Image (cartoon, rainbow, N blue to C red):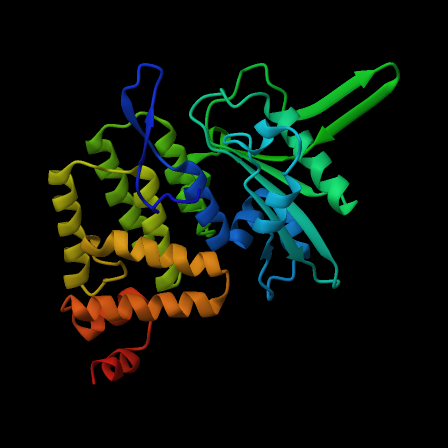
Length: 323
């Protein structure tokens, strides 16, 4: 959330006051959803994807949703009791639909009973807008075995059943994700991989496989670059020797004329620029991020062709920046 640098792990203290590292899942998923919103909806809520006017940008109601959550129940505003995103989605018929996306980005089930939290958020949104949201829970961790996938309540003849869309990473089929033509499935596959306690060598092999998969896809350079950035963040490889080998693989791709990725030495910088553009939520913000990235690459001595491919800008524009 606020104050956390993208791509970094945060330090938390356990009951014994010993510092441990926790990956910033909330930041990761917020960035991912904002960058690939419609593609995520295509995977998780196909009916909404078909009705959405995808020629228009969705409106992320971050500030409005924070205000909605200002209830007397202080716990609802604390992580992990926080519905991550409320999005206004334009429809083809001219209407708009609010979509609640809750990311259950925990490695355990200490966050409480998910169906009850989903119903709580629904109630708050309805009280504020008098409109039922389209809800999606993205479950990345292990939930209790007996936990239902919907909310139900019965009391003296009053009955409520609330069902919502639920994308459970552990239930996604690896072969389906790997053969998919939807770019979001590459990151979902990586997020599913990251659920397990993987050794550094396994992380290295996974990243190498991801590079090969991206190389086979006909997606845009920008999508491939951003997908690799997200995959690197969620896999979170730390071994320095393996990082060097990974850099060599990227360098080899460059020598073969397949330079579709930002040099790993500038990954953190590129990650920050990407997040800055997504935060602005408009193409103008992304263009500004590309230009700033290009200027930084120029300052670091990279050639115009590498900069053009890494920043996703025309070669002649890079050459004009050098004059």
